[in-house]
Image (cartoon, rainbow, N blue to C red; front, side):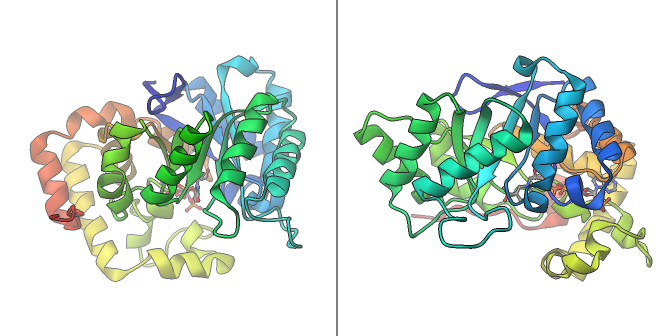
Length: 328
Ligand code: NDP
């Protein structure tokens, strides 16, 4: 496994990590979740991603029980949680980024994950109803209390991230070291254009979500009947299917398959290797509902070498969506 520095911070993360959205405490059994974590850990994965909203807290509970059983050295892996959406409770202050919710959500995550501290704690979305000072101070208080080690954002704009850094600098506090954006062959602008400057200025690290666009970047949706239970066939995820699964995208996946076949690898391996090829990616968070999917995807770091300039150009021609920076 390759390890990358999280931006300019001192933290080293495995290039591939494992997340629990939709799967843990929901789509898959606790037994499968355990097999996934063991497979990942044995392959050198050192980061497990979670959030209060995932299965309304059940995902963190499942992960916490597995970690307790596994008895892995706590210093050998990184754990995260994210706050904003709440864990299913929706009264005022049970969601958002107020000092009250960020603090209580942190305590809840620690309890559910059965751990003393989170390595990474994310603001899952920006919150326009909370002053930036309140967010930055709260994260720094949690750091001083030893409850979290690093803090970051998810799906914040470059401007919001810079505002947090400005507040941090004015108050001699620690700013966000990491952003968690979506990044894959179909969603590129934030990672490739919007953040281009702040990788250099504040040394932002990135933990990438949905590297396979929720499974679209596999061949399963090219079939007339995708496998039963696959994410984009699930009734409760109709909203996600509407967002992701389009004819035009599928036509591109079919062409990517031809290219991947020629390289002797699968479409998911090609797609994940493509994400890793970007040096501003600290880690790509994998999702998997089956151990065999994870085993396949874990081969991707070795495939990066196959992505020569010529292959990258062919990919570019197929996806035809390179984001262009503004001229002025
Ligand atoms: P992906 O885009 O990689 O999708 C993963 C899903 O694709 C799997 O659960 C599986 O679904 C399918 N799949 C994966 N590999 C294969 C394969 N080799 N062959 C066939 N199907 C495959 O990642 P996720 O969308 O799951 O995101 C990864 C993580 O990122 C999450 O767990 C979470 O931790 C984080 N995340 C963060 C967000 C944020 O807002 N910060 C938002 C979303 C995710 P199935 O078998 O059901 O079809």
